[in-house]
Length: 160
Image (cartoon, rainbow, N blue to C red; front, side, top):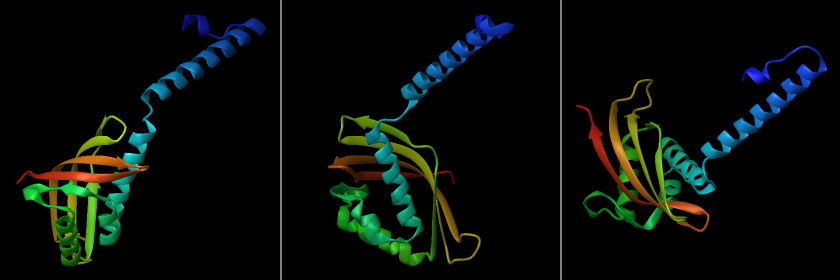
């Protein structure tokens, strides 16, 4: 970096401009190396959309994101997952989903796994939730065309 210090006169300004261009180029290379692939971005958006559907209590939109080959705990299929979601949404007037960082692992172009921790809250509509619980969640996803669909879901309660 000592060669990038701005000296006196035009030569110093030219050197400073060259160093600035080099810095911008290096930042661009780092940003592209750290950027996510389009399939991963699309999957992250789908997970976020799923969380929004839960919070907005939209069981039909939530069901549309579940793959027809879905398998959940205890052999739960797509229909049973919809029934469970509908029951949860009926039980609570207000539902909240807070997710930790997503650990996305792509497996080829059309499969992925996502791990995260979530806190689900449910309530009667008051300011504070009637219930709250943290879970470790592992999910598998399948891309069909341009859309990601939930293929499997397993959750484990965290804490007391």
